[in-house]
Structure formats: structure tokens, C-alpha cells
Image (tube, rainbow, N blue to C red; front, side, top):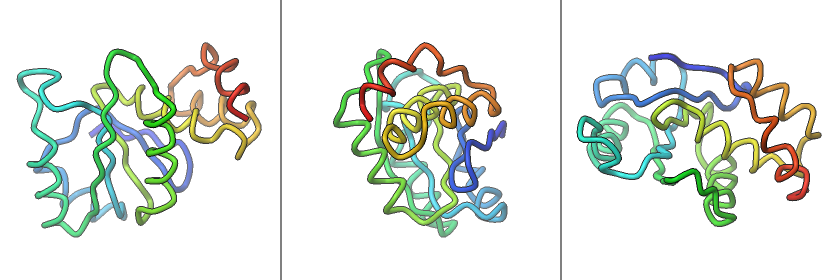
Length: 139
């Protein structure tokens, strides 16, 4: 697993598997968030399979799929709600981690200064500067 820490409460990663759940629990994670729609690629496990493995390992799971680079206000609101409702720390994942980092950036608008949002994602290897105007407009 290639886990990148955004904050103490959230890390992001590329696709995980059912076999990863025990290790995630052992690393102290309390929940996972999947940001991939089922069937995005043929080799991707369905969310239901991962949610069942997460539950078995003692993790909570939430599915907030985003596709086509479209980050709707509803998806951002659902992500913000998940961050406040799920036990942390949380691991959010997608194909590369970028969607998960983008959703976090948009969800933090108004809660954190823009420079802090951009710095946190940059330190984790995700450049959100192209979203700066949208993040600032949500504040």
C-alpha cells in the first residue's frame, strides 16, 4: 500500500484490497472511504467486497464514488460528512489517491486557509493548485 498522510486524521492511497484490511486496522485506521465507482476497471474489487472485509477487520467503510473528474457539491458534502462521522484516522482511496485528495481539499474550504490546504496536499504529493480558485470560491 502506498499511503500518503494528508493530516493526522486522513491519509489517501491508490486502490486497496480486501487483504489489506487487517494491516490497515493494525496501523490504527478506524475507517476507509472509497472514491471509485464500482466497475471503473476490470481488475478492481467491488466496494461491497471491500466493505465486508473492512467490517470483519473492525473498520467502518463508506462509498462516495466520483468519476470523470466531476466533483459535485453533493459528493464534497458527503465527503465532509464522512470525515466528521467516521472513526479516525481515515484512509480514503481511489485509483491513484488524487480524487480522494481533491475531495478533501474541496471539503476543507472555509474550514482551513487555502494555503494550508494546498500545503498539506503538496506534502503528500498531490498538486491542488489548479483547484485553488474553486476551493477559495467554496469558502
